[in-house]
Amino acid sequence: MTVYSVDKLIAEARRLSAEYRKATGRPLGGVSGEVAEYDAARLLDLELCDPKPGGYDAVGRGKRAGKRIQIKARAIFDEAKSGQRIGQLKTEQEWDSVMLVLMDENLEPFEIYEAERDEILQTIADSGESARNKRGAMSVARFKIISRLVWTRENGVEEDEVWGSRVGSVR
Image 1 (spheres, one colour):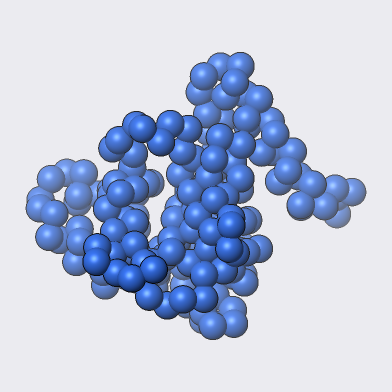
Image 2 (tube, rainbow, N blue to C red):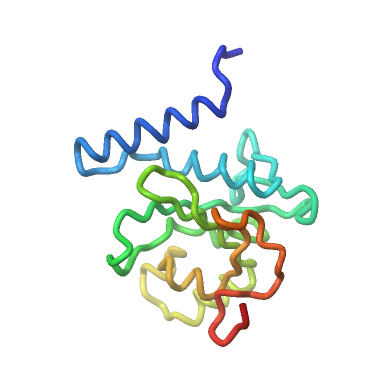
């Protein structure tokens, strides 16, 4: 049993990661993924898996009860930089959806998107046979197109079930 709360440890990890990046120009490896999992669970009523069964990081509660969710993270340091990619999706393993936690330079979340398995697999299949696609790699921009915005820093949980990131949708 530790004397520190997980909330305080995550806050310190955020602070150290930001300081490390300022000092070295490089991100502190592995921190963003852990922070993103913690934030997604806290903000969207998920139960983190411990140990991880492979394929997914959390199981939903509430309106996502029983849903197996992969959680991916991307810290956006320069919004003008194009071609940012999310980590490899475990397409061969069992899961129901993927959440992408977008974070600012201090590893604070500002948006969370969720895409369903069928949509992700179809998008990967439609994008061709390149080695990158076979590994389940996808750009942040492509993920945002096929997913729905489920949480924002400004509004919290997005109750509107309209897939707001889709072209031609009404917001």
